Amino acid sequence: MTVIRTDKWLEKAYQKPDEIFKKLSSYFDNADEKDVAMYLTQHGMYYKPVRNGEALVESLRKKNVWGIVQQEEEKLSKLWKGNNIPIFIFPSNTYNRQIMEQYNGRSGLSFRDKLFLFISDINSEDEIRALFTHEYNHCCRLAHNPKDEKDYSLLDVIVLEGMAEQAVNERYGKELQAPWTQYYTQEEAEKIWKSIVQPNADLPKSSRRVTEILYGKKLFPHMAGYCVGYYLVNRYCQQTGKESKDLLSIPSEKIAFIEK
Image 1: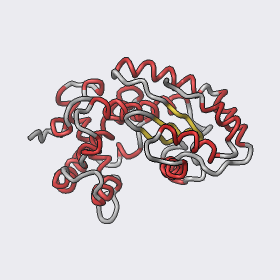
Image 2: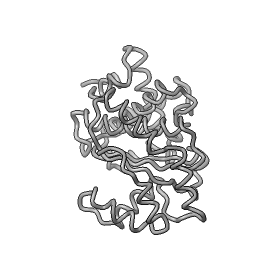
Image 3: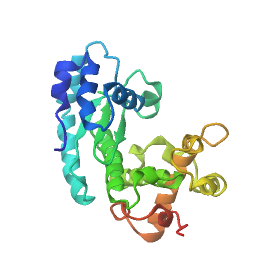
């Protein structure tokens, strides 16, 4: 099981997303369709059908979105020794201003055992490939990392994000990386690491402060955690000569050069 033909689901139920959420609930433990709907829409999946939505689905199909993702999965599953997981593709929420303005209408969500891509009809083939690279790298890191995700700390979360963008950089260059990878210079990122992130590195990912640091809420620099995560991973690769495929099982502390 790899790329699920969700275009066929959308043919029948695009105008009734609740039916889709109900179908997806079987892929989640201890979650009903309302839980699934809330979680997926928070991360960019459409929930309010647009006018002529069927034409949108047909546009994605004509772009061969499902075939493109299948091709990428076949390449990267070999390169990263990835597990055979279900991959779901749905339209993104084009009413979400942040997704449209900062990420050009694309988003995604990854788990150890499944992956979701949310795509608009304005996305290019390379944008789709880069998005899949980022999200599938998450899946592979979660599978190869000896630490269980429930035990992840702030450091583990930012390294997870940094690894994914390092993979995008290696495959597609800076042009297709997430905007936050270029918010700060290396010197600025080092200062944020030393003064803010490192002192909080061991906080459990469930901590409210972790969210504040990750996204730069309250008085923290914008997207501080994400930016520092990419800085740490990129620095590690430059200093060791390793590539993203070599990183998947390396502990976060080693990548950050603070191994205990």
